[in-house]
Image (tube, rainbow, N blue to C red):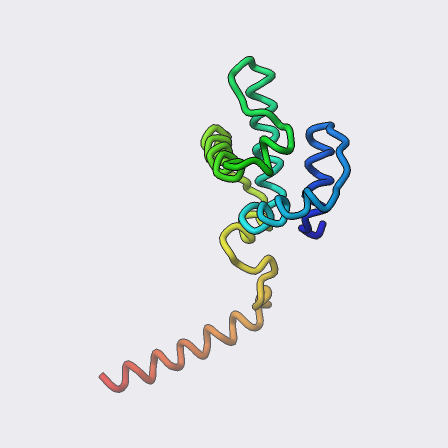
Length: 137
């Protein structure tokens, strides 16, 4: 999914259940929002606020003018995101591809697996180099 102001707005409507049209007056607030946050951030905060409301704890409103476009909305959103991330359980993803992505490594092994013959040839080369080195001592 491409991260454009319109896709952010569509996702906001899906998560909140508010069916408000995407219009020119909502474009600029979404553009500002897109500069700093991701769709995942939006999802995290909306779910965080929904969980707080469901449990009876105080929470901000999910109304567009309060969450996205108000005067200090982005600063408050940033605080809500920090709280949501702090309260999120520490989940360690053990799936190899996910761990490799998270650590910035390629998902595919660039070298590939060596065959037994290649391993033996490398071992013989190493033994030969080691013998040459010992002769120099």
